[in-house]
Each structure stands twice: as C-alpha cells, then as structure tokens.
Image (cartoon, rainbow, N blue to C red; front, side, top):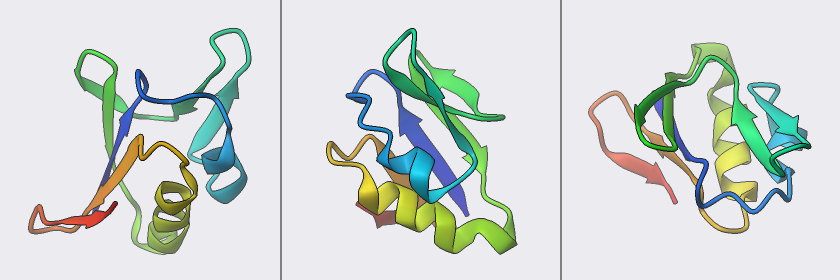
Length: 81
C-alpha cells in the first residue's frame, strides 16, 4: 500500500496529523508534512505504508477535508478518496 499527499491542495487543518504519526505539522507553511515522503512531482509526496499502519493511513486520508491524501493498494488501485 502507498499513500500520496498533495501538499499544494492541503489547507492546514492538520486532521491527518491527529490520525497518523507519519504526518507532522509545518506551522510556518501552514501545511502538513508527510514524513519520509519522496517528492514524485512538484508538491506531490509519496511513501509506502507499513503493514501495521494501513488503518492509520486510511483514517488520515479520510479525515482530510480537501482530499489532499490518496491511498492506493499494492495493485495501484485507488482506495481513498
């Protein structure tokens, strides 16, 4: 499973931070940060989700009010949103 985070879309509500420790607050920018995320395109960060964190990643994606977080299964199918 992998997660994609669009930092440009993020509005800084930090709902994801409350759901999964892989997200942290960047108060200066008013945006969340995906810890250990690799920038695949400008402002699009991707990382693999550990097996033991799959539920947390899904909750983080569902909690985002602007759908800045997407979750994909191992086959590349988008699960959330």
